[in-house]
Image (cartoon, rainbow, N blue to C red):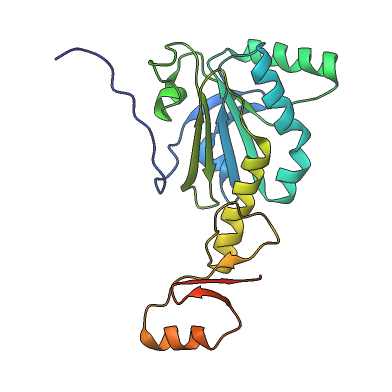
Length: 215
């Protein structure tokens, strides 16, 4: 056997691993900071890099959207707090965009390894572009992973967040390519009586097991 370190990765349905760290907005106990709200926890490879700058600026420019959807943003990279602060200041000077959300300093890589953000096959010193959607109960609900050289899609991040929140609120599921305002899928019937009730409803019936409705 070799001595290669095993990198763990939380799964959908797991409680988000807790940690304590320094961030650009001060010390953070992650579980306390995110309690009672949705959270998008995302990593980027490094400060002062071009793709990361576009992504972080995108999150910052959509801060109002996330606030309106009871969602906190938390960023992370394997950099020092001093590098983070310098980068935040640099971007603000050059573009006018301020990163108000906390960015975790993870120079020792502990949090990156805890969340499987550091993947040696891609890089041993830079976190990949991971996105964790965490619900108000601290449970991981959706995970996205991108390599170092491909930026994330902000429209998809926002769509996925609304889909998760809508599914929870209305106890429904979302079909392929669902966007807000479109019909949603009603859970399939569990009894013959439920099937007959569904057939008499005003749902859009593809078949008894696939029915859509407006919300």
